[in-house]
Amino acid sequence: MYSFMGGGLFCAWVGTILLVVATATDHWMQYRLSGSFAHQGLWRYCLGNKCYLQTESIAYWNATRAFMILSSLCATSGIIMGILAFAQQPAFTRLSRPFSAGILFFASTFFVLLALAIYTGVTVSFLGRRFGDWRFSWSYILGWVALLMTFFAGIFYMCAYRMHECRRLSAPR
Image (cartoon, rainbow, N blue to C red; front, side):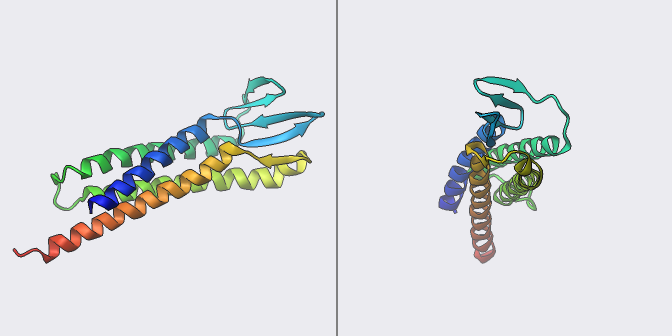
């Protein structure tokens, strides 16, 4: 059980760090505009060597930002619950800490999937046609890697929960 929780905690730490870095950086998309390279993120865009805040309140940016922040919060809460799971002092008999951590990591995975799906859909259908020479960049890719890491953290914690439940049910009363 502890090996699953350790693996889950490792995946959770890496996934949360990647979520925060992907959300904060401005390299989600790169494109060529008027002969010079430009890149944009969720909070600002850069033309040449100058960066500007994205002051427009466009719905897909706001939705992507909100879901990325929710995902980071769920992953951070999952890490806290995962660390507390090592203590093995059940505060509630019906609520298992490994199970709660797994659910929080799956919620984080769901939120980052929503954020990336919204960003991908709008970028490909609208911005991809506007800019001829464009591509997704490393911040966007970090978001997908974070999705995988939080998903595997949830899997590890659910396996730890199942092992704990099997031991609890098979123990003599």
